Length: 164
Image (cartoon, rainbow, N blue to C red; front, side):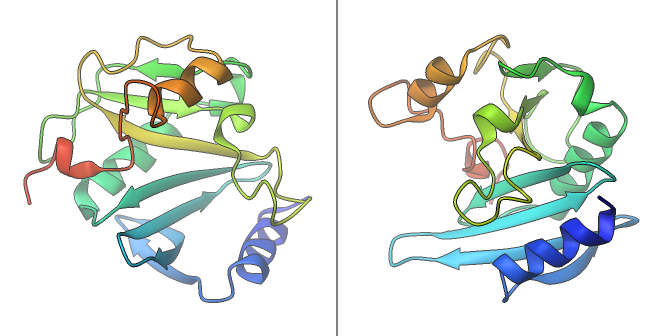
């Protein structure tokens, strides 16, 4: 399965998606606008997987570029497959994010209902503030922490670390 297969499948599942350049990378962008919020999705396709970034109510291209660059500098497929990984030493060009969160496919659930080809291949990457997660959180703990009944850590809300 090659890169073009993933790109074509993402564009099939999200027909309003478009390609855009962030830094030196060409990525796929699509959005979902609801009455309450707008959600942006950014996808970087690799050979045998893809990385997705999700934001709510805006994003910063410098942070977006830094996230993809940091994630590409490591082999995310070599990280633990059953828990959240937190990588420190992340320096966003603006704001106070200090770490990168990597949720493997079991936690990320990218395109879970949209495509069998994409299911289980997507890594969700997101910026973190100091102390939001320790790493090693299980699927259940991660879902609880970002959910309404848990700590409500809004990893998709970049306003918590990037001034608007």
